[in-house]
Image 1 (spheres, helix red, strand yellow):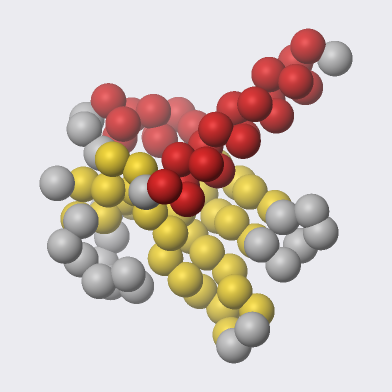
Image 2 (image 1 turned 180 degrees about the horizontal axis):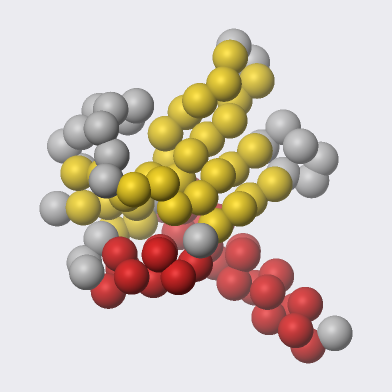
Length: 86
């Protein structure tokens, strides 16, 4: 089963994450199928870069997002709708 989750990059106390599609049984920082975004929590405000087309593709193929990635996707979708209504 495929999952969409975060993999940690960066150095000590300076985390940087990639949003990746990977096998559920793979280790956190192990092999992945595709990078579909980035998450930089130390920026103020936190910077989230998601390729929504590819995320929708993988969701349509049955990939399950982790709780954190689901929250990031929901926040990105909400901010996109608020931008288009302004």
